[in-house]
Every structure is written in C-alpha cells, then in structure tokens.
Image (cartoon, rainbow over all chains, first blue to last red; front, top):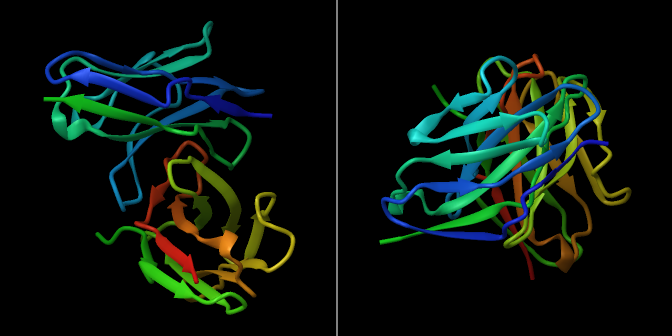
Length: 113
Length: 114
C-alpha cells in the first residue's frame, strides 16, 4: 500500500534563509510525487510534481524539490524564504498504476521576519 | 478559466438534518475526488468518481454518506442524519484523465453541526 510521511509537524525558518520541508514515501511501483500548499481557509494549491526525468523539479513561487529514489524522499526546498511562504505544506504520492493520491499529514511552515 | 467551484463555502446544519455539498470540476476534467480535513490535520480521501461512476469509495463511511457525479451537473457529496462528528472541511478536487496530472482543489465547504 502506498503511504507518505512528513516527519515534521512544524518548521521555523528565518526570512532569507534556505528552507527544507521533508517528505518520504512508499509505493509499490514508480512514484508520482506532488507538493501542495494550503493557505488559511483555502483549498490546496499545486506547487510541483515529479513524474520522471530530472531528479530536481522546479515549481511555483521559487520552490523546488529533489527526488531521491534510494532514500525514497522528495524534500521541498527554497533557497531564500519569504514571510509569505508561511502556510501548510502537503506532500502527496500516487503509484504509477493507481488513481488515488495519498497525502501526508502536512507540515506547517513558519517564516520569521 | 474557472477553477474547481464548491458551494456552499459554509454550511450549518442541526443534528439529524441532511447536508448536500456541491462541486463543479474544472473545465475539461472528468475525474472528481472528495476529501475531508479536520482542523490541524491532513486530508483524508473519501471517494473518487468519474462521470456516472464511483471508482473508489474506500474512504467513505459505510452509512449516511453518499456521492454522485451525474452526466450533467456538479458532483454531490450527501451526508444524511448529520452528527457533531461530521463537522469538518470537505474539499473537492478534479483532474484530467491521465494519472500523472495534479489534482486541482476547490476552496472547500466548511460544515458545522449544531
């Protein structure tokens, strides 16, 4: 069965510093991996995805994520954090055969001015 | 280019009443998904539908909950005889047919049970 883990409930980063939000996954086939962001009282917004190809994926708002097959990880990164990046971030995985996406429990990112 | 539209945004019901939540997918999207989110928690998958078909309802409670996605009109998530524990945010997402496409989410319906 597929699953995704976000080991940190909350991450605090000073504005201007690099940020990382961690995600590990487990699927039976080839993974399709996604990151979403959720702002208060809103739905999830798609940030980026990994399907195949380059392990480093670039997405919206300057975010990127690195697919690491050996570590089954897909950590979200940004070189320089903004206060406006403060939100709830969800990692998600779908195996290559299925239609259902499984979401992690989310990581709350606080960017401190 | 309208996104996924959910209505109402907020719904208040008394225990025992019925709640009907509507979702219109993005144009060109034929797959609809419903999720439930409790405060400070992640998304829990409920049901996956294509037009006129329920594909996966493994996350749906066996009683009181039902979903449909008719040939014409929005997808409906229906909760009968609501209880306090049904209070949550319910999100709908839609996607194109291929499995490597991301899901696009609506802004949710916040259901409160008095």
